[in-house]
Image (cartoon, rainbow, N blue to C red; front, side):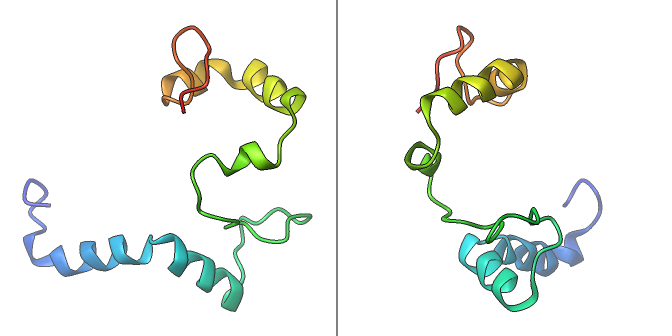
Length: 87
């Protein structure tokens, strides 16, 4: 913010950080909807819990996702360089 000359906007930054809280986003979706929610999905903001996908996806589904998106998953730290899931 300082580099960009936006020191007078620190309160807006804090507000944006506060509004990115999962509980607030979930509540906003319940009250007003969320455009990015897939049509078939009950909600976009599901649990907000790390690795909750393990409760829902089969090993076959996980392997298909890894096969299709391995390069990007490694780039963003979801997989190690050798393709292992980072927990």
